[in-house]
Image (cartoon, rainbow, N blue to C red):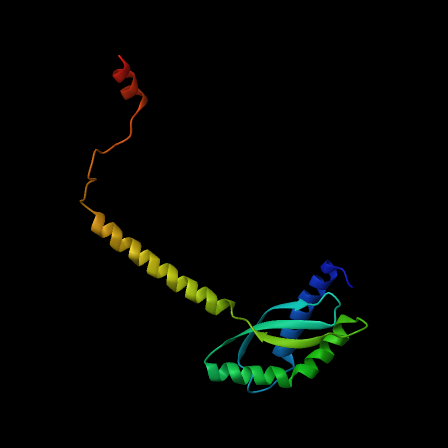
Length: 146
């Protein structure tokens, strides 16, 4: 088993190599606006998972996934040559869902802000049902004891 720090360093290096290779060497027309967002390497350094996002429609995403799968061998060869380790890890490409989750969270936050604004508007000009300050203070307790 490799050190976790070494596995993280190699994962970062794999991400950089794959991104650079896709930009400069892979000329597949199906490959759309692909961004390599991260990578993970198993502790035994045998398998690497490369996370990516694609800007575009679902059809463009499917085409980009197919292009990445067809270029997997070339990418693995390039990673192996540039890393210089004994065993080149196998590559698995996974579509990164973080941007979609972030967008849905932003939508929920916008709905919550709108709801808060409606409550604030309905509260304007209203007063409390009882006294402004219904709590007993120390001065009141002193005056009651005398």
